[in-house]
Length: 602
Image 1 (cartoon, one colour):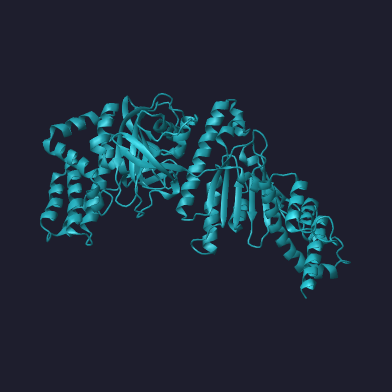
Image 2: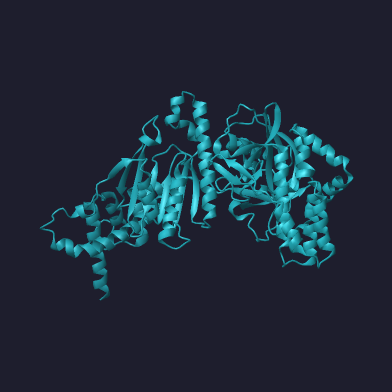
């Protein structure tokens, strides 16, 4: 029985290889013969290790490359054998009526215009695995959104691809692309626009995919000249389809062509796998450590995706950069802030902030693209590491190199009760009025009085929320009430500050009436969104900007020359009560014990 079963398996393998050869897979069939049988089907078959060594030598490939190709081929051949075994009886019976047996496995390529987004989106929605290789991928996000919505409409609410891999062309190669931007006859401007579009696509796709709460996706950079662009889709039945793009030179995406090819024997799949294998993962790595005065000491690194997780109780500090941007308008200098939206930020949505972000491990290893002989363990405000991060943030948002315009001004910190703390290196940069800022950057000029109104509204909302809570200890309520009272004092609402402190002194006081008073003063504040062409409700200022508004941000505004900032600083300095409130608030925000007591982000 055992020998009969072995003989049957040998016959199945041999017949399958012959059928694969007849369908055009000669090279794959030959490799399979070498792996399973060697030089003869009938004689004594050499040991598996010997077969493997002989096959690799004949292939003339590196061990790693041969292993990848062998594994991919064996997986596809297993699926091929299942289909072949199921169809063999029927094919034998119908052989006379249908002499071209291979035609059942062959489907002619389909072609069309790439702007047929519905076709691509349908393929993406139906696929279980997708590998997408593009240049800038600037139009990809919309298709991913629609495809995932469709998956979740037809399946479970947390449906996702088993694997979604997206490859971008390496930044150093964007100058070699010949697209419609070459019609400018200005290579630098064409490169600037490609860089902006790629940066925006990478950021917005990454932000969106993080919000899906799936980890089965990855972004990559392809550092070589592109051998192809397109997508590989794998479907639930095991079939694969390659969606290739043909890009005529100096033409826009509306003129691109596509061709869809069934990949029955994994020829194209191997190419896609090679590209991903030799690409550079876009996984961002961030240093972790602790500040000592104005110096940041690095102790370890962590993946960006695993830091700042609410409730993680992770220890350590993360080095960050903030660039205080300003811009002249009508003869006055105004603050130039970014509106954080679901498209450009993973946290603190619908809040205003200056350009900010992590200092990456890459900024330590290759500041501004220049490799260092030794990775610095520590850096301060004058070091090239934070300067590199600041330049990157400005370039990604504006498309322009800040050159020597960036000026290091101060450091700051932000404490969290339940995750890593933040240590900021703060720079200042005045952007020229003539500089065109891409709409997707969501940069907006703001007068100081507007920021004051937004911040006061934020404080009132927090006060109303605090008064409505019944789950707090007296100590936690007292700490939060003091912080809010100090903020209200700085906003010329000492009357409301007294109400908050009164709730601490008299635990039986009616908190509900105070909450109602605060709520009645709230105003709906909006800002225009350049991308959505509509008003977005502004929730307030982001983290550090809110906490350090009076102690650090406004004085910096005064130094930069932002209109009315110097007057506000002088007013606070001249008012003993406000001056004391500012200094006390700055101390409380740097007290880890106080921050641990605060029941909400204040």
